[in-house]
Image (cartoon, rainbow, N blue to C red; front, side, top):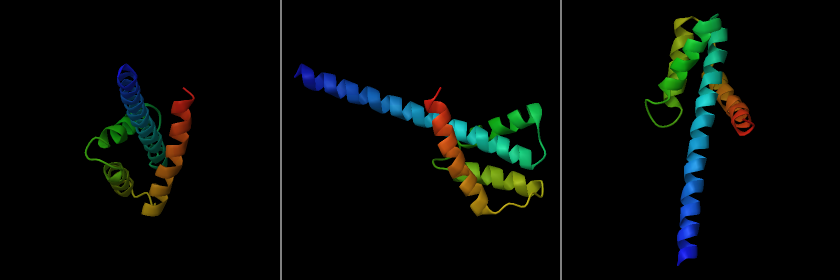
Length: 106
């Protein structure tokens, strides 16, 4: 019975770790996306970092990526930056891989 409890505790710990890592990956992806969008809008330095934080925070509005997409889409539109929805979503996918690699490598 103790072996079962140890196994259960180990699986719970792994699940919690995996969830924490996924949260970090998504936050990193959103930061990278914010920096990418800031560059497109001609924003740099501290203002770009502040914008990237806004993008990270926008992910807390709802489950999934739609809230982040809407934030970036709306801001690019407001600055008259021509960019297709497809290109934004593709950039989100590409940056997810970059973010995962960065988080895993410390």
